[in-house]
Amino acid sequence: MQKIEINTTQNVSIEFEIASLRERIIGFVIDFLVIVVSDLIIMFGVAMLTNGVGMQYIYYLALAPVFLFYSILMEVLNNGQSLGKKAMDLKVVKINGGEPRSSDYILRWVFRMIDIYFSLGALASIFVSSSNKGQRLGDMAAETTVIKIRPSQKLQFSDIIRINSIDNYEPKFPDVRRFSEENMLLIKNVIDRHKKFPNPAHRKALQEMAKSAKERLYVDHVMMSDAEFLKTLINDYVVLTR
Image (cartoon, rainbow, N blue to C red; front, side, top):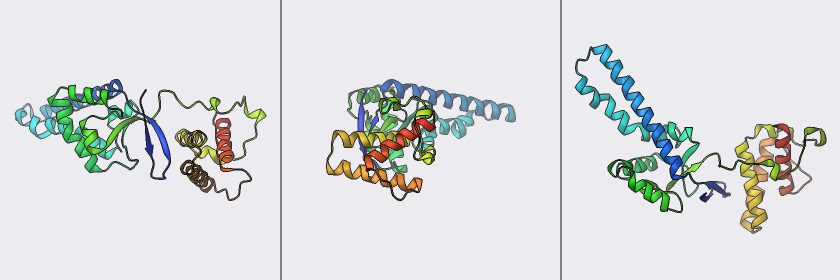
């Protein structure tokens, strides 16, 4: 599986799994079915209301806009996810770690005509398969890519700690339950990166992560190192959310 390393706005380096061509195709098919069903509903609804009069104008006034603007509107309004992407746990992200802007989505949409429609998907397939960042032409122009929100290999906390039950472990920070699994995954990645590359940049990332977690938990003083504190949060989360 391909992965990409992105620096977040907090200057934390985190790895994401790039969406495969197969997953993107399935997402596209789901979106296409949504468009077809939506157009059929509109068509039959208008036909019933007008008794079929002026049906030749329905395509231009209702059906064509749904087909043309569905993807751009969904991604802009739904934070980089169409219904197909959402169903496949995929999302459009900027490779520089920032949030995609409306102009980025528009640029991807403009190139969509070339990548997918005019070439019947051939160009998109070639570029996504050959690019080390899983980018089609539209992604390259907008400096975006499509990632999996939930990795194929889901986070296994048992690989980090060995806790059989809450009976033999006392959680130290019970409020950690307000964190999500994605938060824990980010914490784990920061710990792993610092352990693998103990340089000043990753040490700072570890400190910033610990500081952010303490602020969220309203914890002032902790008698342990930043790494130990974050590992303890993971321990507590595993026990309290089982």
